[in-house]
Image (tube, rainbow over all chains, first blue to last red; front, side):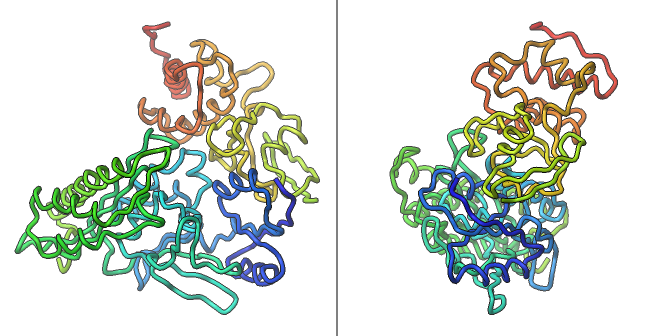
Length: 303
Length: 164
C-alpha cells in the first residue's frame, strides 16, 4: 500500500472537521470497516494522501426509531443489522440482505454506510433500502443535508458525496416502517459471492380489495446503479394480488433492467433472473404480509 | 510513523510502524506471531482471521490505527504450552487439517462461534466458516471436530463418530 497520513475521528463532527481540514489540498479517503477500501488500496497505483478513520465514531453506530422513521447509523455493521431485534422484527429483508454479504469476518467489519458509499451496482444493501424509499443524511462543513437514496447513487462506484462530506445515517421513512418487504440474491455460491442479480419487493396490502398498495421493486446488478422498476410497480399498483400478477410483474421488470454481460453472467441470464427473482420477492413479501395479518401486527397500512 | 498500543493474547504490546500497516503485518512482522497467515490479503480467504474484541475479523483489512487499544486474540493465545484448547485437540483427533494453512483462521472462527453459540447446527457451523477457504479438506472433518469441541465445552462426552 502507498503511504498516507492517518487521522482517527472521535465522532462524526470531528470527522467532518478533519475532512474540511484536509480535503481542500489533499486526496482524502474515509475508512470505516475497510473491507472495500483496503482491498482496493492494496492494488491501487495512486492512493490517498490522507485517511480519516471513522470506525470509532460511536454516534454513528445506533439503530433507533425517531420521528422521521427507522434511523440506522452509517457505521452499523452488517452483523449488527442481523442481530438488531428492531430490524429483525420490522425488516427481515434487511437481515436477509446483510446475511448475504461477504462472510462473518467481513460482516463484523463492514458497515451499512460503507456498502452504500462504495456504490458497487451489485451491493446487497441497496435494493431493500431503495424499495423502502430510504433517505440518507450527509454531513459536511456547511451542515447536514438529506437526500433520497435513489439520488445518492450516480453510477458504478460514484455517489453525490463531495470529498469533504460524510454519510452519517440511513433513514427508512415512517410511512414505510413495517412495510412487508422481501429480499433475494442470486450469487454463484452462498458465501463470499457477488450478486448476479438481487431484488427487493415491498408493498402494503389493501385487504378489502386484496390488492397491491404502493408496490416498490428495486433491482441490483442490472444497471450502473441500483434501480427501481417503475414499469413493474405501475403494473402492480391497485391490481388484485394473484400468483399470475406477481409472475407478470417479474416479466415487466425485465423491461426496467439494463444488464450487461460480464464474466459472471450474460445479460440474457440476468434478464431471466430479474423475472424469476422479482416474482419470488413479491411472493415473499406477500407471505410476510399474510403472516403479520394473522399475528395482528402491522402487515397493512391504517391497521 | 504511527505508534500503536494494543492487547495481544492478554499482553500489552506496542510498536511504531507506518500508518498503512495492517493488523496482520503488525502481528507477523513486529510481534513475530505468524499463526495468522497472509493468504489473499483482500478479505476473501480468511487465513488471517483473528478475534478483535470478541469478533472474528480479517486482520488484513484493519489498519494499525484502528486497533489502537483493542484486544486481539491470535491462535498463539488459544493454548498454553501444556494445554490445548478443545478445538485444537479435536482438530488433531479428527485429522481435520491437511496442509494446515487455513487452520489458525478456521479454529478462531470456530472459537468465536462457540463462544456465542455453544450448540451450533451443521448449517450454523458452515455459515461461521463461510469466510475461511480450505482447499484440502472439504470441511467435513472440521465440522465433526467443531461439534465435538462444542460437546466438550458444554461438559458432555464426545459422541462416537462413524467415519473415525
